[in-house]
Amino acid sequence: GRAPAAALVERLCPAQPRPLGRLREALRRCGLAKAVSKLDRETHCLVDLPLAFAVEPHNSRLEALGDAVLSVVASHHAFAAFPWGDEGVLSDARCGVIGTKLFALFSLQLGLPALLHHGDRTPSGALYADATDKRERLAMECLESFFGAIYLDRGLGPCRSLLARLVFPLARDLPLRRAWLAAARRPYSPPDTAPRDPEAEEDAAMAAFEEASGIKFRHFGLLRQAFTHPSVYHAVVAPGLGTGWHPSARVPLGHGAVAGGVDPRLHNQRLEWLGDALLNLAACDFALHYFPESHEEPVTLLRTALVNNAVLIGAAVRCGMHRCVRHKDALFEEEGSRTRGKMLADAFEAFLGALYLDRQALGPGP
Image 1 (cartoon, helix red, strand yellow):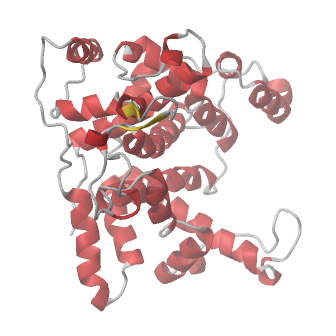
Image 2 (image 1 turned 60 degrees about the vertical axis):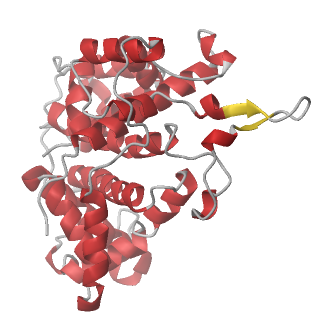
């Protein structure tokens, strides 16, 4: 069904009455003054009325959702297929299946452009027939809105299966398709398999977080990883030579681009990378359901507010995550420092990634 993170977003941002004034105030609190100005320009004299504008019968709302869905599916498959890959490796792998031209090709494979209803001219007045790039973008947006509709109707499982068929469409690609799907369905095994230790101070703080949040992890090592900043594995190389990676955390030879560096499975950067995509989907899902009858502008603004760093930092503090972060960075202890804020926002996203993997709600598929 919906991404597991969506329920957490709903708990952190419970539904409220929906006048524009409340949305404007929420955006201001997040430091999004430009978004408030944009909202004022869009709504003019409707600032005090409820958000009950008629939804225009086009696909822009579904397109934004589908873009987030495709990002999550591709991100999770990259995460599973490259267990030793750092953020750069994962991003490159995701880019291999996500892109305007590739999505336009997938759209043509499905025959979606033939089903799309659209005008003859672009918003700028050019004819679609004379603008190849505009037609490609139209096809891409059609594919994204199609995936958004599938997600709302069936969940992530069918989206995953369809993307695999599009990436590996030929009969000779069937083994690759099966391997790609199998990698994502394989239960994630965190490198830290140690059980909870109630005597350990760090574990006690995380156990208290579980109790307060009502979210008990099946694999406690995943929670530890989500709250472990890379600085934990920094070590002094030699006097006057600064710091490097602790030898015990280095990746053994023979594991590709990250060989010789720190094992990326030990800290939270991989989980943060996955959690970023999940957060975007959760925020988009929540915004669509919060404004079910409005046009796309308030939905976009609310989604922007939900993924804003200030919101993530506040949510992390309210949840007590600041007591759980494992680090060796003195700047984290300084209230209001940029380092502290970034580490908390990263920990929140990593937590979402860990929660998704722990629940492994992957859905059916071939």
